[in-house]
Image (tube, rainbow, N blue to C red):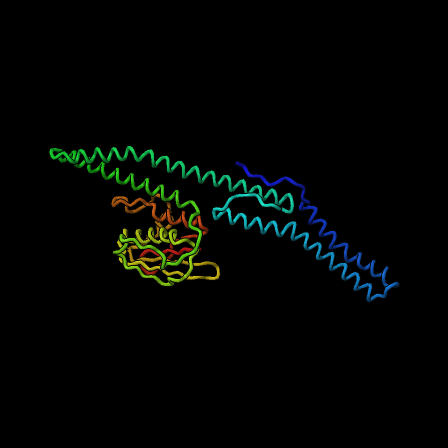
Length: 321
């Protein structure tokens, strides 16, 4: 349902600005004439003081009008846009000041509706496809298992069945990754946490995990931070790394998180592609190429960025919140 800005009369921005300019130009000249008119009767000093008080009052009124009609609505609209980006409802504001700001507010609402509808369509399509493909994949797996149970199955046929099983397993991995990346697009992890709150899984036990700045506050929930860190750690483990280092720091322009490992690193030719969905250099060993894509998608949905940076050895990433 399209939400619309309430239609009511507001002074056009041109009228507000031109009126302000006229007031700025006219008031000093008018003040001089008033001083000359009042000076003979009440004295020049009192006349100047009276005009100064009048000019101050007019300036305060003009400033209040500009704040009410322009500054306050623009700030409120910026806050509303920030709230919408964080997953808040796209509802009209009560006051827009001028028709032009009202048009801008309507454009923000329309954009939010379009992006929300697009996001829902992507998630709905992903859920539908993964659900519909689950049944035939289950049937393929069951048929392959049944064939493998035949002890008299020829070697060539058994090899073919093994290939089918591997392909079915990879298809299930890709479907699971597609669901994860669709879920990562939703801004569901707004909050704060620290590296201490990350829930390290047993699968990463082979890694020597080093943490510095464990108490630094990062603007992501513990669940969201765990997703990011787990994918980076799994990527390092799959690449043959033995250790991973995480360093967090609060900075004036936003928190930072650096993640590096002692693996083989990322070649210069692959740096621009590592965040592309389905890009992997380990396809033969079961890599899906979705881990870093999920990390980037989740971070972008929460106003953060991730880049590959130069490190002493292995792969190094910088996350800017």
